[in-house]
Image (tube, rainbow, N blue to C red; front, side, top):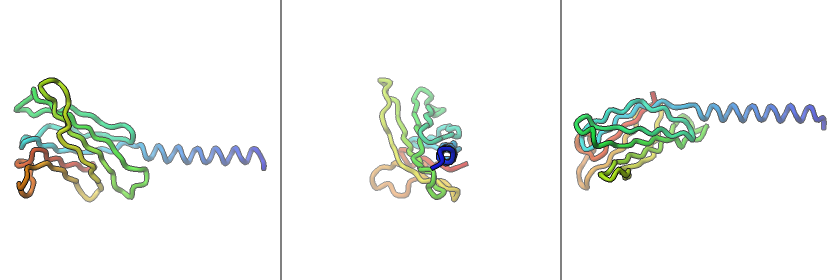
Length: 141
């Protein structure tokens, strides 16, 4: 076998693999709306790429000394048929300064519209932003 031909094939395979990995790591722009105990928090758009989670500290204007942390990561494989899978975690900061997990979920986003997660009390009925402990919608921008 010709060594030059082997080198060319190897270089071509490496370039294709690098291009596929770069395409799979392009950031997704995600818009997020978050309500905690009926209060909407001001959450900016989030850019999330594979293996690079976004972490935001947000607070309610009516209680600025009570922050929450929103962590958004993507679990989407490069070829996931138009669906972006987000691993979303919401933490509440306690009086001792430690972060405690309040809610987490895996959401599948597509161009068809937003996905929603909520945490409600037992027997509460249909979740709404006003009636839920946590209510979050996320959509691709």
